[in-house]
Image 1: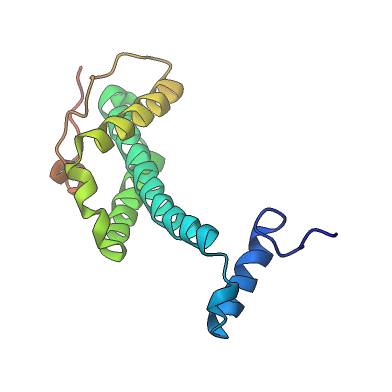
Image 2: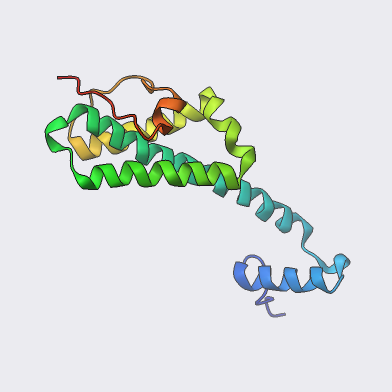
Length: 149
């Protein structure tokens, strides 16, 4: 017996195309319901990861801005502005994620990623234990953290 080349484990893209074809044809009994449910959940997780990743990049650049005033440059400014716009757009496109910035556990994970990025980029590990700014400050296009010098 040969393995189905369209099975979930052999080729997820071929599997997804086959599942879509079956759905459109109304062949509901032939669907791989468990894997479809897993994939739908993964879409939501992917959207959450994207938001967290963008926020960590933004926060790392704001930290570097604050901690390394002599290194401010157009590249950092462009990254901050780009991430702010992308986060705003992402929250608009996926409104259910708007609750994430109010979630302390989510902030803990994001801040951990932020500190890792900032430590790698600055060569230092002296960072606040938690984010020193509010979400509104972070997203405010006019907000640039003052130097600690």
